[in-house]
Structures are given as structure tokens and as C-alpha cells.
Image 1 (cartoon, one colour):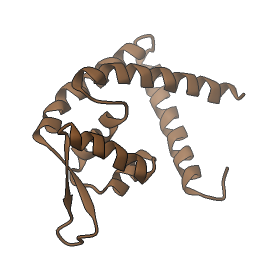
Image 2 (cartoon, helix red, strand yellow):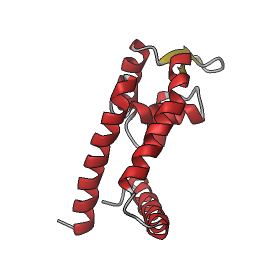
Image 3 (spheres, helix red, strand yellow):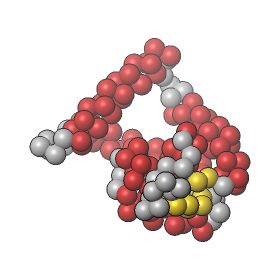
Image 4 (cartoon, helix red, strand yellow):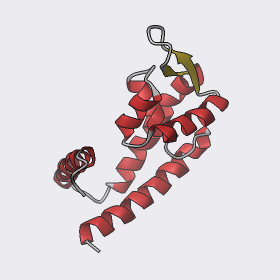
Length: 145
């Protein structure tokens, strides 16, 4: 296996487990913090818009939204102009989690990058940003692997 892909996969799994551990005390399941993040930036998106922003399928977001609605984090409302569309809206409960979730993520980021110099950290973010953009472009092009 490619050294990069193996290391990235292992790192992603470890980071996901750490994020999961950090969001559980807030009553969240894995990935729900990412849905909240998208809606904190732009509340009232459709499940399809949230899915596109997170590079997942719409059914994945619909299932997450079901659970988040049941736990009082989201409400669904029909779009005022196009009644076929459903939009996801944050509740006060979800809005109240923003600061603590963002603080938790920043703290985790500081901990996992503590052994990096500031220059290494900037280089890592630059390189990951480039890899992310390339991967997103490949995913958007059905002719590519």
C-alpha cells in the first residue's frame, strides 16, 4: 500500500476516534459536529447542500438529521418558495454548543500538533489543503479513479 495513503488512513481513523471522544460529552455522535459546523456557517441548508459540503451522500445526512432532530438539535421546515425542499435549521440547543465544540476541536488540534514547529504546522496545513483540493476535484470527475 502507498505510504501516504496508509499513513493518512491511520491518522484519519485516530483523529476520528479522538473527535468522537471529545463530542460524546455534548451528546453528539460522530459526524454530527461536522453537520453542526456547516449549519453554524449557513443555517437553513437543505440535506443535499450539507451533503455536498461534507462530501457524503444525501441519505447519510437525512439519517443524521433524523437523529439530530430527535435529540433536539435540528428542526426541519419546508422551503417558503419551493415547498418540495426541506431545510435544516439549528435549534437554540445546537447553537449553544458552538463555543464548547469549537473550543474542544481547537484544543485537540493543539494537542495533536504539539510536536510540530510553527513552520511545520503551516507546511502541513498547506500540503493537506492541496491534497484535499485534488481529492475533491477527482471525486467530482466521474472519469477519474
